[in-house]
Length: 139
Picture 1 (cartoon, one colour):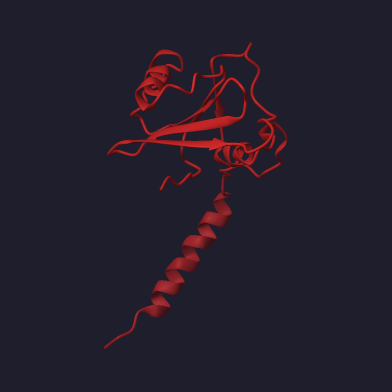
Picture 2 (picture 1 turned 45 degrees about the vertical axis):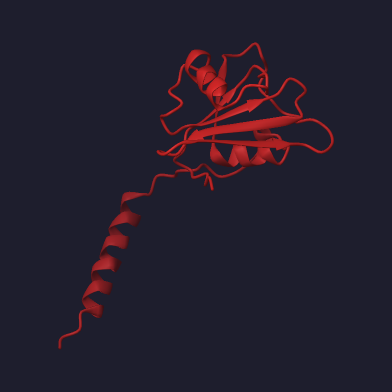
C-alpha cells in the first residue's frame, strides 16, 4: 500500500504519456524528460492523452509501484498547460484533490508546514518537563 505523506515530493509530467508504457518506460521518462531519479522516492504522476486516466509511479525501497486511476465517465478537468516546463510539483493535498477529479489550483488548504513561534516551543518544553517530573514514581 502506498501512503502519501506531507514530506513526499510529487512530480507531475505536464505532457500526456502513452499508457502502453509500463514501469520501465515511465521510469525512463522520469530520467529523460522530468530530469529526476525514479529511484529517489518521489511520486511521479502521469496523464494519458484522452485525460481519462492517471498513473502514479513510486519506488518504495524494494521495488516500483505503479497505480492507475481511470475515470468511468468524463475527463480530468485540471492539468497544467503544456507550454510550461515539462514537470510541475504538487503538494500531497493537491494530488489527493486531483485524484478525485478536482482542481488543485483552487484548493484553499492550510500550508503543509507552519513554523511554530519560539514562545510556543518553550512552553511545550516546559510542559513536557513538568509532566515527566509528575510521572516519576519512587519505588
